Structure formats: C-alpha cells, structure tokens
Length: 558
Image: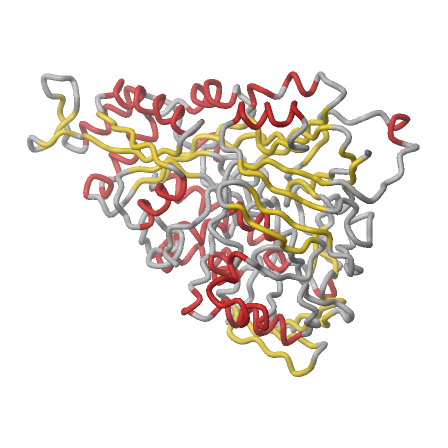
C-alpha cells in the first residue's frame, strides 16, 4: 500500500482527526484532560417534545458522507473517513468523557503507570468477543500493536501513534504491558480512539488474507455486512454486544437493525437525498445550506468546530523556490484569510494564523498577533528582497525564470478557495496554475513530491499532529509531504510529545507554533465549523467534541 491514502481531515487522525484537547492522563484513568472543543445541537428539540419518547429497536440508520475509504484494514490506511467508519467496528482501551474529557476505562478495566512514565500496565476486560467469535485477550491487543509497529505493515497513522512504544507484552490473557522508549504525552489520547488503535482479530486477518480490508472484523456494536463500490458500506447490529463504551446511555446492542454509509460527494445531491428521506444524516454539509435546516423543526443541526486546520497551503520545501524564507513569507502575506472564509464557508469558522486550531490543547492565542496578516505591499517587498523583479507582463521573475507555481486542489470548496488564492497571488505578481484532482489522486501526487503547493487539512485530537506532519522522520513514510527537515523543529516536536506535565507541555507548543510561523512552511487559512443535519424520525444522535457524531444511543422512531 502506498503512502498516498493519507488524511485530509484528519487524519484529521484525521483524525484521528475527529478530536480536540488532549494530554497524558494520570494513573488509574482518573485524571481529566483540559479541553477547548465543543459539539452542540444547534436545533435541539424542547425537552417536553422528547420526554415521552422511548428508544425502540428496528429500522435502518443511513448516513451520507462525501468520501469513500480505500479500505477498512485500519492499519493500512491513513484516510480519516476510514477511521470514521471503522470506529463503528471497534473500541479503544480507554474512552474519553464527552463532557469532562476525562479518560475512563473501556476495553481495559484499569491501568497503572510506572513512576518514570515508561511502563504502562493495562488489565483487559473479560467477556468481550470479536465478530468472528474469537475472545478478546491481552494477546489480541499485543498482536494488534505489534502488527502496527511492524514496518512491513506500513501502518501510517496507527504505527505513528505507537511510535514511542519499545515493546508490547501479554504475559497472560488479562495483562497488557506497554514499555515506552520515553514518556509519551499523547498515549492515552491515541488509545482512546475506537478506530486507529482498535484491537484486530489475527485469525480473521489470516483467514481473509489480502481481502481483509474489504471484510473487516472488530469487537464493536456493528458487524460488517457488505461493500458496494462507489455506493455504500453496510453494517448489521452485533446482537452479542454487551460491552458498550461507558459514555453511552445504551449499554446493550445498538437499536437500529442496520447502519449504512452512502457515498455522496456532491453537496446538493446529498441534501436532496436528505429531504427525500433516502438518507437520515447528511454529514459535513456546506455552511451556506445550514440555515434552512436550523429553522425547520423536522431536522436537527449538529455542529462543532473542526479539531484541526480545515484549510491550509502546504509548500514543497524540496522545490528550490521554497528554500527561500522570503518567498514563503511573501506568499503568507499575500493571502487574505478572512476573504477566503467569507467566500468559501460564509464566515462559519475562525481564521488560522498558525499550525494549530483553537480547539486543540496547547493553542497559543498570541498567534493571532504574530501570525502573518494580509499585507500585499509587504509581500511584494519580500519577493524583491529575494531577488525577484517584475517582467513586462507584471509577473515576478528571477534570472529570467518566471515565478510560476502550481497548486493542487480537491474538487468542491477547495477548488473554490484555490481560485481565490490564484487571484490574490496574481495581485502581487505571482502566476499560479490550479491542478484540480480527486482526493486520492491529490494525496498520491503530494506523497510523491510531485507538486509545488497543495491545499490540505487535518483533524486530530492532540498537538502531536505536528509531529506527524512536520518531523523529518515522517518524510519517507509519513505525512510530512512538505519535506520539512529542520533540526530545531525536530527537537521541539520530540520534546512536545515527551513532556508529560501539562503546563510545561503547553509552553513547548507555544514555542513550536511561533517557530513554524516564523519559518512559514505552511499558509494557515481557516478552521471551519462542521455541520451535520439529522432528519426525523431519527432520535438520540449525540455529539462528542473529539469524535463527532455518536450512534450508540441513536434509534429510528418508526
């Protein structure tokens, strides 16, 4: 599997990813993590309207999403949508309370940590079974993590999330021991994700072979049923499910008979499907379409601020033009973030001035002061300082070679943003060509380094996402598409992930953000609000500020 199937939302990791503030929790699972992200019901029903409703079994819950995953072998993909879907199949060692962001036991009954922070002992829950009937044991987790750490697996996100694990042991069915190379602050955050680090059945993988990615097996509330290429993925209820995530109200099997993800890339087509009743939930609809659903009692709008950067420009530092700091700074100053936000997302978000969003732990509010602002005259001055002069056509050139660049953009709102960026760069004298690609092709192109600039976005729960995108170790097989190789940054990023004390760690990330802004490797643009519309008669869809929509308590009032 090539490195081309990586994240857009992240990995968002994600996002993973689908997450917000995170920090290493203390021993025993009782330490809360500070958080900033919020998820809300923008059109919540009055209490008296739902007080008499009781959940009932039956029906189908159909969710429309824009992207189709490449596969559901979660260790062999880096696509955030794969993690989103595969999370329904799995569960994490721990979970995170949506209100307090406190880490709590889940598939691990409890855990302890050595004084030096390098040995973690987990007691695995009894009575849990994979969908194929195989019992979940400590060995299951050990084999899963060992597979992720095996270079032959090429586990992009799962492997990186476990990169500080030196060894994994399972001396008996109940005991899982993780020995770390050094203290690792984001560990519990990563272990709480029901997707990337869920336990896998080695028996199922062995039996399915190369087909496992299209017939996955997990321990979660939903069992894989079928995959219709380009159309949908279907799950059926796991009738044996008796080990629900403790943050759910429903501790038994899911209520609907089936859960279906339909792939609808075009926004208006998705909304038409919602209004016709062929889908129940429209995911991440565009901001311009939200108001009519907020004002309609037949729908609920679930919204949250993305846990990551929704849009930024990544510059390929392997290109000679981007080895010049003045050029990178000039392009940053040429971009009017607020204008792009207003045009593309109707202002529904926050402008980004650094590599982290306000929803993540460690975000430095001062970045709004020292981050680059739109200053076209200063942008031109920086280019001239770098030795560029304008030619007869009004574009900058150097040594007879015009400053002509390309930018990769995904179809949809990214293409719209690219057109605005193109006009802004033209205004300062830089010619920009837009190359519009489908997501998979865009990532594959960026992975191979065959680009000048690309639009990008990520979602993840921890500022350690910057390690994934900017540490030099992530150039060859990770997500450092920019090819950034900087010793000072490498040192800071390692310090950020190994500093356990929350106050000290926050200071490290302040320094990281300031340095990344100074070096101008990226052009941050915005973090958007994400809107999901739920159609009645579906009830009980909840929002987790780190994971997004949760379906364990959902049911169809039919």
